[in-house]
Image 1 (cartoon, one colour):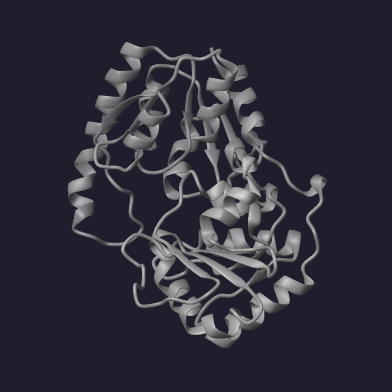
Image 2 (cartoon, rainbow, N blue to C red):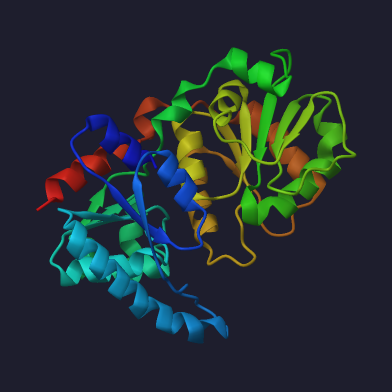
Amino acid sequence: MAVIEELKKREIAELKYIGSKNGPERKMIEKMGVDFEAISCGKMRRYFSWENFVDFFRVPMGVFQAYKILKEYNPMVVFSKGGYVSFPVTVAAFWLKIPVVLHESDVVPGLSNKLSMKFAKKICISYEETKNYLPKKFQKKCVMTGNPVRESIFGGNKEEGYKFTGMNDFRPIILVMGGSQGAEQINHLVRKSLDELLKKFQIVHITGRGNIDIGMHRTGYKQFEYLDEQLKDVYAVCDLIVTRGGANSLAEIALLKKKAVIIPLSKGSRGDQLDNARVFVRKFGWAMLSGNVTSSDFIEAIFLASYNQTKIQDSEVINGTNNIVDLILNTAK
C-alpha cells in the first residue's frame, strides 16, 4: 500500500494489482482506486497437510491465470511483495520476459520469495543481514532499500488522538497491538497486568476482531478491535508501543521514534518475527520478551522500557518507499 500511494502521488504509472480470490486485500486495494484481478493460488506450507495436495494443482492454475492477465495488460515491470499469491505471478512474468522487482520485508526470506528470487531482476531487502541467508547468485541481485512505510502514519494529530481515545497528557500512554494471529497471548498479559500498569500509564489496547472483553472497564483503559484511519492519531499520542515482530509494524514504530516492547510470535511461525525482533533490539535497544511470558515479566519490561530506552536518531531509520519506487521505475523495460 505504501508503494501504491507513492506511485499514485507521482502520477507517472498505471497500476494493476493481482491478488487472491478469497483474500482480504481486494477491498483495501479497490478503495485506493487500483484495478484488482484475482487468481487461484496454493499456500506453500513447510509442514504436512492434506491441503498441500489440493494446493499443488492451484499453483499451475494461478500461473496460467497470471500469464493471461499479464499478457493482456503488458506491464513494463512487476513488483512482488512476497506471499504465496505472488509466486505464480513472478513465474508468469519471467515467461513473458517482464522484469520483476521483488521485496523481502523480513530478515529471513519466506518460502515464496526464496522460490521467486530466481525469476527476479532485483531483490529489495530491508536488512543487510538478509544477505547471509541467500546464495551468492542471489546476493548480487540485492539492493538495500529498507521497508516501505505509508506516509499517512506521520500525519497524526495529537488533539484528535486524545479526543478519540478519551486519554489525556498527564500520564504516558501505551499502545498495545497484538495482531490477528498473536492477539491471544498479548491480550491475556494486558488483562492480567492491567491494574498494576494503570497506576502509572494509560493504555490503548487493539485486541483483534472478536476479542473485546465487554466486562473490562477501567479509567485510563480503552479497547478497540481494529484501527485504520484513526491509528495515525493514536500513534501521535502514545509514548510506548507493545507489538509483535512483524516487519512492517517494527519499521513504522522505528520511523515514528517510539519506545517499544516486542513480543514476537513463535508458536505456528517460521521464526521470522523473532529474527526481526533481534535486529531491532540490537539496533535500538528495544525490549523483547519471548517464550512463556508471565505478567510480572510483562510489567517489568514495560516499566524498564518506559524509563530507560533512548530516543531514536534520524540517521538510524530509513523509509524504503521512495527507494523501492525509484528502483521499480528504473527497472521498467
